[in-house]
Length: 331
Ligand SMILES: [Zn+2]
Image 1 (tube, rainbow, N blue to C red):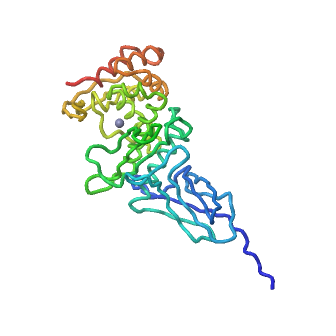
Image 2: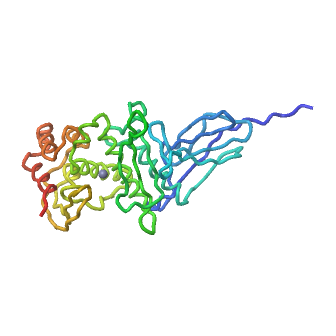
């Protein structure tokens, strides 16, 4: 008796994640989906709505996998080396999942930010370390915990591998609660900007003053988080450390305020309440101009001079100097 073969099925579907800040489920544009049966597998990417279609087809049951990593970065759970992959087995047709658990929306937010910085519209900024570099692949440790010292940090681990491995740690929680997705997204952009600043620039980066590094990262955080969440404003700018100079070089004229200055003492950031304001007369610098100037600069004054000398037609040197002076002032 003839047995009718099952017909082949092309896997497709949609994965979405709850974004509490937008009060809706959203897709992750560029998220990797792997479809697997036995030793056969292939990858495809979701669109911005979360929809995907596999390039493959299967006659029998197969598995869907969400891979939050991409070629140039790996997202790992907590402090482990375990790449985060979510598997759905036994499918013979499409899959539709709206996810809102305590883990996956965090991974999706981190992945979404990294995909934009690496492959998407990042306003012309340089890309973070790539797999093709002579360093190990960038690792993002997605920490399902709270760190009292930082929402995230960038470091380079070269203890046991022959090449440096750039590592980001991103923390999901605050005491007693989870951080909003918008804040996790902003932190991921901030830390990726450090990795990008370091890339092909290691020894200079390592000699660069913290106020320069952190002010640049604050600016990138503001630029790229605004693209995803229009109207986003940076929660705080501190003079002499996490300053607002990048935003002031780009955005319009106006009175700018800050409540404090903060400086590093023995590696600890020490906060000093001290309200101050000034009128910002600078506008129109591009993220690329600011980035090229910062990569040549180890100190605040070098950054100022490179901005003035390399881009003389954007604003007057007096106004640029006023912005840099304000953001580097104490009382
Ligand atoms: Zn930073």
